[in-house]
Image 1 (tube, rainbow, N blue to C red):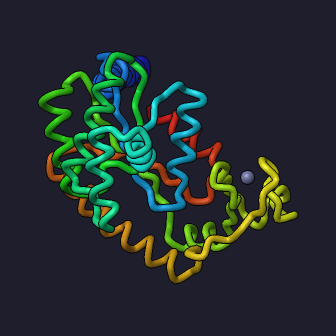
Image 2: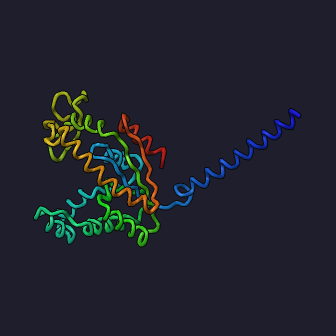
Image 3: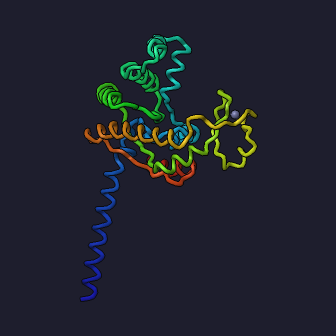
Amino acid sequence: MARAIIFKLLLISLAIGCIWMINRNITKQPNQLNNKKIIFSFFGAPGSGKGTLAEQCVKNLEYQTLSTGNLCRKHIAKDTKIGKTIKTFTSQGKLVPDEVIIEMVTTWLKEKSNTNKPIILDGFPRTKTQAEMLNKILKNEMPEYDFRIIRLVIPKEEIVERLVNRIVCENKKCQAVYNTSMPEAKSGICPKCGSKLIKREDDTKEVIEKRFEVYQENENKILNFYRSIGQKIEEINISKLSPKEVFENFKNII
Ligand SMILES: [Zn+2]
């Protein structure tokens, strides 16, 4: 009698094991078995460290990252057709239209499409319209890519605390960022280039809180669009984590 029960239990656990293995393979499939190229979009409030995470991915995983701000500046400096268009808007103090930004990003993406390196869009799309346009382009013109959204989650209070104590290098070419509690920043001189470390005028509690709320509201609109089309949003809780720990958590989900 006892033997029969043990045998049955064994059979049941074997079956559970099989189901688990099958499930695991199915859930793994989209990321690891189909060899699709990946575009990540990083979301996270200003000061959450998404730029730092992107940098670590470039340095350690050979990813490619796109910052639309930097790309705009490059086009303006090279005086390209897109650069000229951007300039006509910014010189009048106007926002660059989503269509122009999307054209610029799409051109960049297509230039990179001959490599298999994963791509990070750092803080892009920035508006719901950009998200809708990007979604269409990826679907129709770049079906070889998997699109994944990574959202860094952090409480407002922690962002305020981080940014209120932030000091930056005044040398525009260096732009290193420190915290008043860091020993290497105690002297008020940038350890990297020797320039003065200063507090940014807009790093006050009120301004930071406002910036966070405006960001959150806009992010909600974009993410609601993605939810409405069934796009998965992968979250990393980065509260109290160091940049290194954030990177480790990121590596665990990719
Ligand atoms: Zn510096």
